[in-house]
Image 1: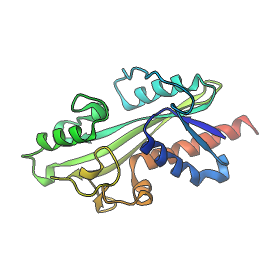
Image 2: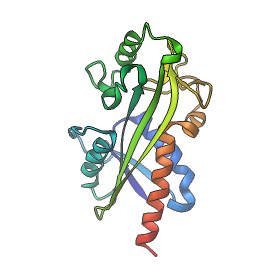
Image 3: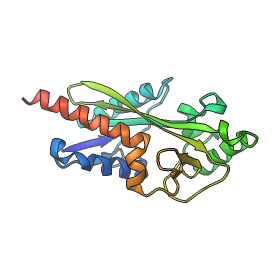
Length: 205
């Protein structure tokens, strides 16, 4: 089965494909496609006010291809910053997807914040749109702390600054399977896979 993941982010696609492979028994073998794979060049405007709204905007746009489409919108919510950067995480420093600039800005804003007040969470909403227009969203979160400096070189985004309470290590040092077991995206993709399996079974009794 081919599923379109409405992203151009290869790191994200690898994570999602790895997690979906756990569901071969219920979904079968999955070939995960990205926007580049199906020739979609234009980016949709993410003008929603929540992760769920932005994920659904992207999923509906991708579903025009006729494929079952998954899309996510995710970010980091820092309590000392009132939940910011939230939906603006990827463009926190202005440009889109500049991890180094985003991390530098986050560290600057938290430079005088003590450890006990550096609580944060990664949050993600995943939207799924089926070819018949049926759709749903799920959400996943994972709790942690923002470190004072980079720790590890793995992952992407804010991972080297995110100390996972589940793993007791930074996501920058976590192995892929360790991270996927507890990450916001791992939890949400598993919920999405389970819901998708139910809906496909319901459509094919």
